[in-house]
Amino acid sequence: MRPAFGVGRHCPGSDPRTLALLPLVALVLACSLCARSQERADGRSASKDKSSREQSPPAQPIPFSHKKHASTAGIGCDFCHHNPEPGNDMSIPTAGECMTCHSEVAVDKEAIRQLARFAKSNQPIPWVRVYSVPAFVFWSHRTHAEAKIVCAACHGEIAQMDQTTRATSVTTMGGCVACHKRNEVTTGCQSCHENQSSKLMR
Ligand code: HEC
Ligand code: HEC
Ligand code: HEC
Ligand code: HEC
Ligand code: HEC
Image 1: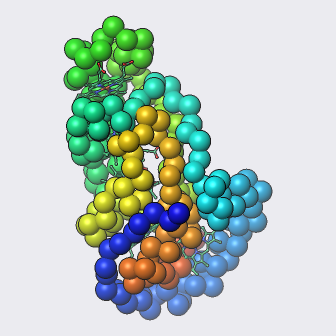
Image 2: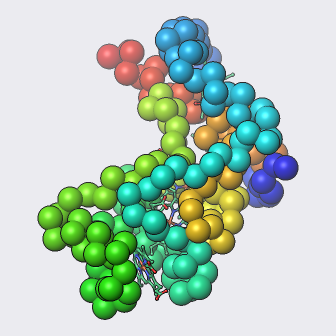
């Protein structure tokens, strides 16, 4: 089942630069396609096949549960995930930030002892990424937050998950473009692949 994307938008119009850069963008993308076709074969079939799109969750260094935090304890997403400048990425709390609660909460649990060791040694927790898009895709959380799209539209019902699992096809080109079409937002190649072409222009 497709996730429910439902934001009504006006078409922002297309940029004349798009036409000029189109052949270049296509060339760059075609090269990247050849080089990556092998490694990406799985990801692409997963986006078409609804049964394989629901990935099994990756094993994480600490058994963090969104359900315990966001649902049972009622902690808001924005308590832990910020959108620092320039707004492309969301942050993930450091072990030190987790310890603002866990210096007192559940301190006798093995997972929290482990967390305390990361905090004490100032080591980043090596979380395994659940959602990611390749570097040649221009992506910004800020643009989408300003369009008032809720987290769940792209990430599913994370607050109900004991293990963070990829629940939508939002990291595939088809997933992006489908929502843009529904909302009458640009589907011009350059709007999502702009960075790559400007790199080549230098
Ligand atoms: C605002 C307070 C708060 C913050 C911040 C917080 N937690 Fe928790 N955490 C809790 C509460 C409350 C529980 C549930 C405790 C219980 O069930 O006794 C919990 C439970 C846990 C557990 C389960 C412990 C067990 O074995 O029962 C883990 C693991 C955990 N948190 C990891 C983290 C990590 C990692 C972070 C930082 C990303 C974090 N927590 C940030 C409040 C917090
Ligand atoms: C207590 C802190 C905390 C709260 C509250 C919290 N998160 Fe998280 N979130 C984390 C941590 C730690 C990770 C990395 C571990 C993981 O993937 O489970 C994470 C991972 C994620 C990821 C996957 C990132 C990736 O690897 O691609 C998404 C998406 C996400 N959170 C969304 C949300 C949403 C939406 C909410 C509110 C419903 C929320 N989070 C509430 C701490 C939190
Ligand atoms: C329009 C779709 C969309 C919306 C809305 C959205 N995300 Fe994401 N999110 C993504 C994509 C795509 C990625 C992978 C980005 C990458 O690889 O850089 C991602 C990655 C993440 C990550 C991993 C760190 C990062 O930035 O790469 C976290 C954490 C996260 N999202 C949390 C949230 C939270 C919390 C909200 C709501 C405030 C939210 N997202 C809203 C699509 C979305
Ligand atoms: C849930 C719906 C939804 C999904 C999924 C989505 N977008 Fe968007 N996107 C929007 C909306 C709505 C806007 C318009 C924001 C505005 O104009 O204020 C937008 C705007 C953009 C823009 C700015 C376009 C411009 O020229 O103004 C870029 C770039 C973009 N999205 C990239 C992506 C990428 C890359 C993905 C997939 C990783 C993605 N989007 C997934 C709804 C979505
Ligand atoms: C709304 C955003 C968006 C638009 C518009 C868009 N793309 Fe993409 N494109 C993506 C994302 C996200 C990926 C990465 C997909 C993945 O990793 O599965 C991608 C990947 C690609 C790839 C590499 C595929 C692979 O498997 O490595 C090519 C080639 C490509 N796009 C060409 C185009 C062309 C040509 C256009 C214009 C007709 C276009 N894209 C428009 C988001 C977009």
